[in-house]
Image 1 (cartoon, rainbow, N blue to C red):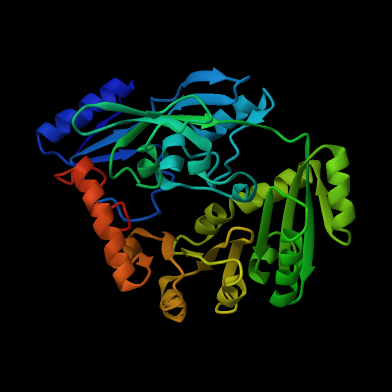
Image 2: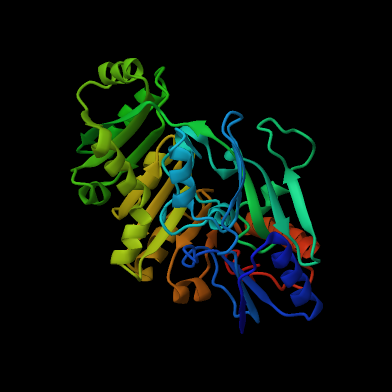
Length: 385
C-alpha cells in the first residue's frame, strides 16, 4: 500500500486518474476522524490524504460566503470566521479533529440543525475530483443558486465512494450577539414531550432543542429527562425567552458555550470512554418520538425538533433486541458509529427489505456512473458500496 498527500486539487485528480488507469483501489481520507462511521474501509492499494489541501481559497465576508480546501481543519476554519463575527452554522462532533471534507462526506451535523439545517442547507458549491482526472465544479459562490441539478448534493453523505471532495463553498451566518440556554428537567418522558410540544407551537424560534434521557442527562450533571433549549440574539430577544421559559435553569456566557460543546461532543466522548460502543441513529416523525424513546432505557440524545435520535449502547449484544423492537415501524435507522469488527460483520442499515433494496439499487447505479470499476472508498457506504 502506498500513501499520497497531494498539495493541490490538480495533483489529487491526477493521482486518481493514474490509479484508475492501473486499476488500483483507492481510499481517500482527511484526518480520519470518521473511521468509526458507516461501513469499514476495505483494504486499498493507495491511500490519499487531503491534509495538505488546507487553505482558504476565497472569502467574501460582506457577501457571507467562503470557499475552502477540503483538508482544512474545521476548528481552524471556525476560529478564523469567529474573528470576523461570523460562522458556518454547522456544529458536528469531533470539532478539533474533523476536516471540511470529512464533515461533508459524512453529512455530519449537531444541535444547530434545528436553527440552520444540515450541510445540504449550508453548502452553495463545491469542487470534486473524479477517477477520470476531471475536476468538476458544482454550484458557485452565490447563496441563491438555482441553475439546474446540483450534483454536489449526491456527494454530501456519500463517504467518498463517488469522488474526492477538493473544496467546498459555504454560506455564512453572523454569530449571535449572545446565546443563552434554558434547561428543564422532568421525571418522566410524557412531561418533557409536552414541554417540547408547547415550545414548538409557540412563537419562539430557538437555535437548538435537544432531549437527553436520564443516563445522558447525568453525563451533563442533570437528572431525569432534560429538555435543553438554546436561543441566540440581542438582549431584548433573550429576555423574551427568559420570560416565556420561566422556571428553567438558565446558562449564559461561558457556561452556555461549555454546555453545548459537551452536547456536540457527546458521541466523541462516549466512544473514547467505551471503544466497543455502538451509536444507532433513528429518524422518526415528531409525534413518534415518544414511542421510540419508550422502547429503550439506554442512553439517548435526540434532536427534538427534527426527529433524529441517537441511541447509545455499550456493546453490540444490546443492539439486536432494540433493533428487533423497531422493525416494522418504518423508521429509518443506521449504525452511526461502531468498532471495525461490528461494521465488517453486521448489517448497518435498517429499513423494510423492499425499501432497502430499492435504495441501494439506486445508489449502486449512481456509483456505477462515477466509479464503474468500484475502485474508490470501497465498502464505506454502510458495507454495501
